[in-house]
Structure formats: structure tokens, C-alpha cells
Image (cartoon, rainbow, N blue to C red; front, side, top):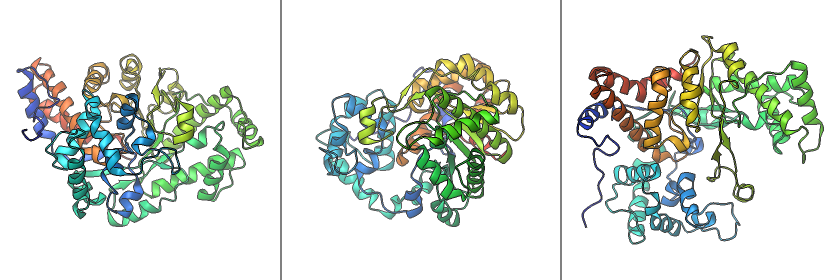
Length: 475
């Protein structure tokens, strides 16, 4: 059997006219630094800089893209090492978890997970055999030997992956101590992102406890609406002081309709007045309050310069029993139709032309790109389109995004590619795929005489590097 290798033209156009042009464009951006501004890598792992525990914990267990596919083929999450300690049937042998992943390799054919994982195995770990039930132990041993090498510690991989800047996602009450350690050793390289979602949804059972965490972190009492807003502002200021450049909002809806202050205060008081085991307000009232708070977050961004990221349109924890047993982010978050034109209107009318405000909108509702988001980004200077995200960071979906959005929004109204991953070693794979897809799209424009080659090369560099830096710069 010949060694497993990856074709140098993977994900580039297949036709013989466009492919040579795409090769040239891709070669011009292949080795550019990575600016990773929308991710979920564990900041503690970077701060502690300890070796990764084992191949299964590095590549399989935390990757819900990967585990969800195996679950769809009959695997159980505990068999893949997913679940809290004590979960019935929880597999604790990392080698056995890795064997189950390798045995299911064929299920990833045609998926972006396949592309990312083969890039990781071949390009990063030097694996030369395809995953299978027969090769699982050989691959496990090779990856285990690699991660035992200090050259594979998390901070060393920042250099190996050419990651110039990486942002983590942190709760509003984070002490930011890990970021302080990193700022001392790697100034300006690992940045926090303010994620206040649990605090903006008062029907959640954790809301009151989260308010207490906010109060403790900010030093401001949160038992009044005024104190609540003041505490949020204080924490935002702490993130700015720690080098943060952005906020992140994963609301179900893009509605940003503000309420009169007295109405917002009344809803806050009503939610706070009931016991901890039952929501104090109705679903409609919570939706109104969370929309109001998105407007407040936008207003605060216009004040403090933090770039506002918004990615609505996901029904989280589709299977409540799975969420109750295993927690969030286990592959059961499913896209729904999202509406932006009316939802964003209050914020864009108020701040869409402000020089101190920037909103980056993400979606996994493909139809909305050409119908709503591209036209909005094509006129409001404060709005940029986020890169294809989650279920859409796949080759064909990224091509569809370029075709749907570019003609109306242009390239300059996009954020460039910013990955959305917890899987640290997939970062270079994801950026490589995006650069290849963009090279292919730009090559077609060149072949159709809609762009000159030098313009395509410049645009490819913008999408890969310049636009992420510009989009997330302090306003």
C-alpha cells in the first residue's frame, strides 16, 4: 500500500482553465499568518501550556462536528468519551475512543470534517496511513508520540500554525486571569471576547446565579436594572483593558427592538422577583427583553469600541434529554430560518453610520445572504458579513456564500475568514480550506475577465489576512 498523501490541488476547481489560475492565487496566500478572531479554544490550555492529554481528547472528544456524525451512525456519546464522570457506559480508555473514530472514517466522506481531519493527521502529525479499524492503533501511537514532544505544546503550535492573533470566547464574569498571564508572555496575541448571553435571557434557570457571578466579578450590585447595566459596562471595560476587541452574541433571534427604560426595568424586576426554579417572565417577555438588551449591547459597543458579533438562527439543544445529560455543544444545535432586515433595523438606524460602531453578522441560514444580509452590508458602513460559519464552513457552502453575497456586498464589506472552532489543531486546516475556496472563486472571475489576476491576488490576501484585522480593529 502506498503512503497516504494529500493532493496539492485539493478543493481547487476541477476544470483545466480555472485550476492553474487558482493555484497561483492560492500560492500567494497559503503561508500568510492566521488571524483567528472568532473561536472557542480553551484559554487555560494556552495559559498553562501543558501537553495535550492524549489523541482522543485532542482530536475526538471535544469536536462535536466529529461526534455528531458518528452518533448519526449509531454510536452513543458515552462510547466516544463524551459526558460527565459517572455517566453510564462512559468510555475512559482514549485508545478505544480513537479506535471507534477510525472505524467510522468512511462516514466523513464528502464532509468538511474529513478535510480538516486529514489535514491535521497528514500535515501536522505526519500520518501516512488512512484511518480505519486496522490502522487505529498505529495512528494513535504516532499522534501520542508527537504531542509528547514540547514542540507540540499549545504555545509552540501558535508559532507552527502561524497564528498571529487568536481570540477566545469568555463569559462576562471571567476573571481574565489566564489572559493576564498570556499578555505578559505573548502580548497582543491571545485576546478575550466578551460573551454575555446567559445574562441577557432572564427565563433561563441559571439567570439569577449568573447575575450573582456578574455582581461578584464587577463589584456592582445587580439586584436593580440600573445596577445590572452598570455591571455589564464595568465588565466590558475590564475586557477592553485586557485587550479584548469584540463581543459575541448567540441569540435565537436578530431582533434588536429597544424598550422604554421603564418597561425594561419592569421586566427585569418581574424576572428577579420569582423563585430560582421557575422563570419570572413569559417567553414573549423574555424575547422582548433579550432584543432590548441586544440594542443596549450595540449602544455600549458604540461607546467602548468593542466590535459586536451576532450569530442568530440556531435552535440550541434540540434534544433536551441529551442536553440534560451531557450538556450544551454536543452536536444537537440545529439551524432555523433567521430574519435580519427588520430585526437589525433599530440598531442600524441608530448606529449603522457611526464611526465608533461595527457589527459583524453571521448566519447559517443560506437564503438570507442574498436576500437580506448582503443588501444590508452593501449600504450600512457599520455592518460586515461574517464568514460562513458552523454548518456552512464547508467547500460548497463557502462557494455558495461568495456567489450569493459578493455581487451585492462586494468583498470589502466582509470580515474575511475567521474560524469558529474549539478544536485547536483544526485551525490551520480551516483557514487553508477557506483560502483554497476563495482562490477558486477568484480564479473564475479572472477566467471570465471580471477581474485582473493582480486584483484577484490582492483580494485573496484581503480575505485571508487584511479584512479580519480591519474588521476587528478597535473603532
